[in-house]
Image 1 (spheres, rainbow, N blue to C red):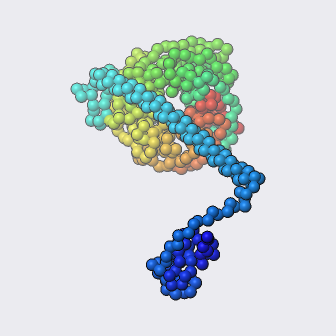
Image 2: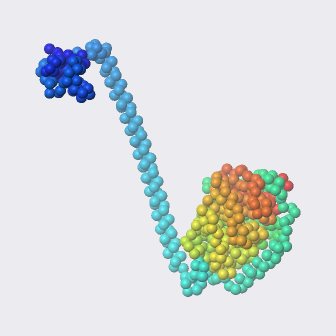
Image 3: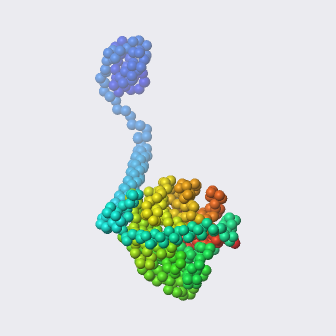
Length: 518
């Protein structure tokens, strides 16, 4: 027997009967209905409580099988649907498994890379500790404490004698007097000619296995307006251009013929700076191997100057040498290192006269002599430009303003201005008479590596992702031309005579020359 629910019209699974009305209901449904409708019977509208409901005990009837399961084809369809659902779930699980495997592989790769970085940093830390202990063990040569009134530390060397100081002062006075009489040569390129600069030649001068040229220097005869010492040079040397690269070699190329001499080998790490001597047939190079090497011209062959090793110095106790600047006297050279020191050395004796450290722990990335030779500037990892007095060896001025390491420094030939390029993507121009910055050139899309004034001081070249040349209009710097011929970051720029020539090097392994439509 089956009982029909008066509320749903369906067979009641758990039937109850009302004592007052005699109607049969599904227990679950009538309880919900009464709770929602103020205890009113759904059939008669009378008050009805749950206590008035009596459960009925009857045999439960078996519900008939649905129509979809009463035949073989319909059951096969049911099985097929269940199989499809199982396969879709299996495919989804496989996708999740593959994603988990990829994430695991990526995590393992990151963990491996992190381990290698930690190992490299640990090794560098140990090397730094060793170098520090070696440096601390070196005896100080100036005073009992090895420090002067400015807080900087004079680390070693024979010291700068009074005779040398008088030589520096004499040359400085002579150069200052000459500079006051100097005027801008009529042959200097005009702004319109600067705007016409275009690439005329390109030379891949270094090894392709370790590509990248890091520095260059033009022979003095190609940079200065007049040079009384030119007759002392070999004819081929006057067209020489020297470059240093990641491949640890120095290469000298004849700019006019495009022929390069055999590479000068000897350095064991990358070459960071090269410099021609202003009066002698001598070339200098500085390297990450901690040495400054001297190369002497031995004549020429096929219109290419030939150089041979003439000596080497270790002015920083084996630490990486990143900057090199010849003093205007031609008798001395200053170098700077990543260990934070700069050194002043005698070329004739190849001895370091003095080594000076900054008042705080920092690395030096760039350095240059003022054209008069009495001050020396260094660009540091702490975003500062420090100015040093060569007579007292004191840090006489510090320029703040950059927010990243200073990578390049250049003085204008008139001695009034200095340019500095930094990792903060700016070039700052400093007035040395007022000791302050008067303009900032912001190049947010360029990693700056090199700045250079031309001999007249009218133009400034900036090397980064490309080459940009600016002109002075009073004290304001105006952009004139952008040269984007290199396919990799530019590492060095230099003006040639009268600014009609511009030379550049890059990590694309090429030395390029740009000329005006003069």
